Structures are given as C-alpha cells and as structure tokens.
Amino acid sequence: MRIVSLLPAATDIVAELGLAADLAGRTHECDWPPRAVAGVPVVTSAEFSADTLTSREISDAVGGAAHRGSSLYTLDTEALGALAPDVVLTQDLCDVCAVSYAGVSRAVRVLDGGPRVLSLEPRTLGDVLDCLVTVGELLGVAEHARERRAALAARLEAVRARTAGRRRPRVVAIEWLDPLWPAGHWVPEQIACAGGEALIAAPGEHTRPTEWEAVRAARPDVLLVMPCGFGPERTLRERELLTSLPGWEELPAVRAGEVWVLDGPAYFNRPGPRVVRGAEVLAHVLHGVGAGAPVSPAEARRLGRG
Image (tube, rainbow, N blue to C red; front, side, top):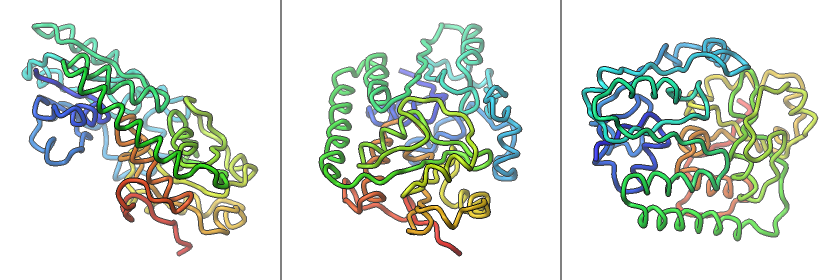
C-alpha cells in the first residue's frame, strides 16, 4: 500500500504501526523517525522560512489571532499525483498547522485511481490514541493497532500511578509566545496525567490568544514553554518575549526556578503517539518522577535567568 502523509503526526502513527516502509510521500516537516522518513519524497513546501521571522511575524503571516489565514504549507499536486497513493492521511483540525483538508480534497479529486483520504481530528488524549486504531483499520493492521493503543494507554496509566497522591502544582502551558497562546487540546490532559493542575486552558479546548495578565493572575507554580513547531533552541532565541514581560520575576514559577522549555513538536504540539512520552516528560518536570526512559535536556530544560 502506498501511503502519503500530509501531517507529521500521521507519519508518526504510520511508523508506530510498523508501516514506515509503505510511506510514498510526506510533508517537509515530517521528521520522525529520522532514518525511516529521510528518503521519502516530500510533497509540500513552506510559504516562507519560519527561521527568519519572529513569532509575531509568523502569527501575522498566517492570519493572526483568528487562525483563519492560509496554511504554512503549499501542496505540490503534480508530485502527489506522480506518487499514485492508495491512501492520503491529512487533518481538518487547524488550517495553519498543516495542509487543509479542503485543499487536499481538491487535489485528490483530479487524481487517477481515487485514493482514499482520511482526515484526523483529535482533540483529547483519548482521541489521539483512537486515531492509531482508525489509521490501523484503514491500512489493514487493525489488531496490531489495537495492541499498540493498549500499550500506549498502559504507559499513561503508569504515569498516573507514579504521580498519584502527590501535591498537584498549578501549571500554565504556553504554545505560542507572541501573541501569548495557551496550550489546549490534549495538553491539559497530559498535565493532569503527570500530576499537575492545568490552568487557563481546558481539556479538548481549541484555545485563543490570551493576555499576559491572565497568566499573572493564575500565579502558576510551573510554567511550561512549548511553542508549536519550535524546538528548544528556537524557543530560547525568543526567551525575552517572556522574560521582559511586566511582573515576570514575581511569578511563583519564576521565583521557584520552575520555568521549563520543552520540545513542543516532538511531544506536545502534534497529536501522535509521542504525546505519551510527553506525559512521561511532565512527570519528571512536575515531580521528579521517572517514567519510561530518563528525560534528557533536549526534551526538557529549566529556563535559566541568564
């Protein structure tokens, strides 16, 4: 079966199901697992280089606070057609984060053979795990998908068990720096699973920008910084967007040294299997609890004052 994934999380799912060898095409941002995707043809490109723009410039370029702008992605319909996919995996959750479902549908209508298009729209941790089964059923590995779902769910339960009964720190998670955007959807559940109390955003919620005063008023014990699409080093380049805000030094999280820079794309922004690792990382961040492999500085590091 020839699979084209137009969503990094979907690529993660295909790999989790042991079908990475069936990937015929991917987006330019599909980067996991590195060896498995390295030789897979790319059928998308970026409208501009995010590395050369600030967070505010990126936000303005894709439509600002309303999240109604054009996608960051351009789909190469000729390349897609040449790949002759049997299945195209896409999403209909956010037009900014990946090629839109509407755009993919238009492209597929003109292809010979009529590939099957599956749109993934998870909003909660349960939805993310269910996507594994949905994709597995389509790709003919339903039983294996259910086994993988059960294994991932067991890891989440292990995190809950290891953090149960502990004091639950109050947590604010930030997924964009300018404008300030709280992390919603499955992230509040990751925080709760790891023994924290998520503030500002609710589980499953598609959030909107918030004022800095809302963060100050929440007085979080822990502040998680996980900008969508930014690795830790990219996040650190814009740290002053946070540290220069009024009242920054008075936040309980700052005073306690509990501001953490996390790998958002790997474990928090994308609704793929690695959100489970995200919960394990948060168990370490919130409680110093080990769950799964030891947490590396590339996965979570404290934001220093320097």
